[in-house]
Each structure stands twice: as structure tokens, then as C-alpha cells.
Length: 254
Ligand SMILES: Nc1ncnc2c1ncn2[C@@H]1O[C@H](COP(=O)(O)OP(=O)(O)OP(=O)(O)O)[C@@H](O)[C@H]1O
Image (tube, rainbow, N blue to C red; front, top):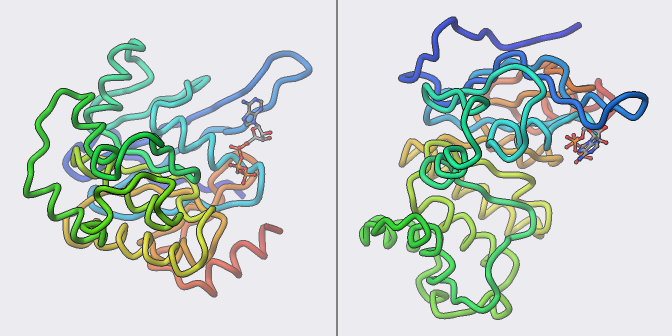
């Protein structure tokens, strides 16, 4: 059985901050071709937290990377707001990613020579925009980073480093925050802290979050979970519990 979330005919920029339409992604060609996504359609409402789950190799990271403009689709379209990013030049796509999207990865990707504060401000500076001091303070305090601002990554725990990465991603108030296994390198307590903050960002600041995870407990922080299997969305859960996510994963052999 294939499943796809209903995609409205128009972009619906007011309701959906991101839309995937019939996204196909193949790697390689000829006998070596691998089709990672086989016609994925999904809508991502503004101010909601969506988790993407599925067995290993089901296409989760490929889907996230295509949605975030980090990887090109083979066919189909991806809207961020009302812009079809599959039609943008490389330069325009880089600018859109910098100005409108935020990223958090499993490996924290902080610059080792810079302090936490310098790492957080990096995106704003690269974008040549003056980050709003009050927003910076709000994020730093909400993430409990105030007394870590002068520390370098090597002087911080993994959880603290990931909180710095989340702060950096949120500083430009991105339309969508993409998170690829953000708790994959963290112990469960630090992971829960990061997830709790992502949840707060959604509830308090109307942040839109799209997160790939293997962890049912992480997915249960989301408003809904999309399940991929063999490059297709096969199920969707709303207000998921950990048990429901476990059960869905068991059914698809993940
Ligand atoms: N750069 C690439 N070149 C060739 N094949 C790739 C590439 N990236 C991914 N694939 C293939 O595409 C399919 C989907 O991979 P993807 O990494 O998106 O899955 P995933 O669900 O994120 O897996 P995992 O949970 O193991 O990280 C797999 O068959 C994978 O081998």
C-alpha cells in the first residue's frame, strides 16, 4: 500500500511552509542506479514538528536533504514558502538556505577555534545581518547556554555542543529547521534536553521543525511522524506515543 499526505493544488504559503510533490531521487545510472525516493508527496504545516522515521535505507536522509536543498531531486518539486527550490540556480539556492532555513546535524559541526557565542553568531555574520540581541538572549537563556558562551567546543559536553548548534540554527529565525538525527550522538538525558528545546521552539516561537530520527522516544516529541519504507511514505501518525511509534516500526520490520 502506498500512502501520501494530501497535497493541495496551490502552494498554500500561509498554511504550509514546505511541500514535496512527487519527489523522485535516484543515485547513479544504468545497472548501478539506486532509487532512494519513489514519488514522495508531503506537506509541512507552519509551526509544527514533524519526525521522519523508517528502516535503514528507506530514504529518510535523502528526503530531508532534498527538502532542505542540500541534494537535487531527479523529478518532482519542493516548495519552501511559495518558491520551488528545484528551479533555483545554485547561487539563489545557497542564499535561500542561508536566509530561510536552519540545520542541525548529528555531528554538531561547530568550528573548534571559535567560542560558543562566536559559533552561534556565525550564521548571522555570514548572512551579513545584524542578529537581534534580544532574540540571541532569549535563545541562549532558553537553551541554558549563558555560562558557556566563552567556551570552545572542546570545553563543552556533547549535549552543550548540540545546544549551541541549535542556537546557531535558530538565530536567523529560519522558516524551517531541519534536523538530521540531532540526538544520535547524545546520551538519553542530553538528547531529551535538546528535543525538549525543539518542542519549546515549536510551541513558544512557532518554529517549524522537520527531523529525521531512528529513536521512537525522539519521534514522540513531534506532532506527527511520517514513516518511509523503500522510498515511499507508508504511514503517518499524529500526536504519537512512543509505543505507537515502536509498533509502527515493528510492523515495517525496522
Ligand atoms: N550518495 C549516494 N549514492 C548512492 N546511493 C545512495 C547515496 N545516498 C543514499 N543512497 C542510497 O539511497 C537509499 C536511501 O538512503 P538514505 O541514506 O536516504 O536512507 P536512510 O533511511 O536515511 O538510512 P539510514 O537510516 O541507514 O541512515 C539507500 O539505498 C542508500 O544506499
